[in-house]
Image (cartoon, rainbow, N blue to C red):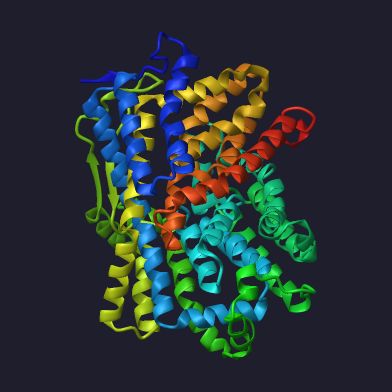
Length: 562
């Protein structure tokens, strides 16, 4: 039996239907920011509210609603949950083996200043991981690194979420941009050019914004030269690579240029005063952290050896994302290379695509076509498996016993049990929202803004990423709607598509999945409400900037449209 989505279930009234569609979202914000529920409880109850709205208001058959939730829950476990487990596991291995002490010392040798450490780790290194892997790995790894350096866990998580704004649109080797080409018919290269003429403004601003959040205006000016080097080297490279190379490499190239430019700059320039957090200034432990530890001289080999787990992580996830290796790992390789053919056979055996019972092709979407629904499980092709391989190699590099490795993995699993439960619940909520048509209702409402649509176009992307946790998913969800609405109001379609992706990056820091991942990585499971309250105002402010940029590009700055 098929069921056709109804986007105006309340008396064919779009406004009233939109208010109904907002109920689960409003409830989630209330549960975390006002009620201050534990993250996993907020996630589970939000899912229940979404199911109730889908069935009682949108008329979705209960069985289909439950099965769509199960599809989302499986996706929350793999690949998202798997990435978090393996990332935290790898980090804990470096700590237990003592290698992280050397990593911390190597960063301190560049700078003891917390402001500059945030730029190096949260902004540049995090962007590199976003470009190579995407999903939750960048925030999980960079936040854990900052905590290891001595940052307050909540602060580290918040800073990394905000820093992750700059690279999200080109994350995972450009997948968010590439994915939009199919449903919209507009070349990925053209969308890449448009996003590359919006995001660099944000990318140049984010380093300054991070330090302003951390220290205020006066102390930000003390490191303004480093901020300019970090932000502008990233933004310029992002513009050039997105406009002349395509969507695959902007993050990786921009992050590397920014990282090396700042590291080299710090060899010749130092701030007049070293900034540390107030708690460090009064703690008795400041002296061994800032002086004694920094004075320990490690050889280049020791530093390379200590960083090697993260270098391996980078290597493996980069390989996992490359063509034609990526399709081979998933069993979709069609070339003639014997080695890749062998990998492809293994990939086929370890990739499962199972029709969701009662849901596959059982819902008729807005285009009048049935919607496919699969449980897709990639055991070897998942990015988390690449991180696990890095962890396995690290066991031998760090000379850890099998017993220590096992206990470290069990420790990570215990810590992450509730965060993974939250992630599965909120991804399930996202799938119910999409399958029932609630997301489309909200998108259609924003599309009714007429001449103001260029201003509100980024809000669609922001909303999509908040709901789905992914810029890729938001682009697939609202890409076609953006194009159709743009043509109706006389806006260039490529500008609307770019706005969807650029606006989406500002929603990443408040997405329930991102909040859960960040808290899990720094050991703050159960305190998701605090992190959401920290990031919410910054998300709205940065979204406003993207809205203004898009509105201007539709008018006085129309020459910027490719």
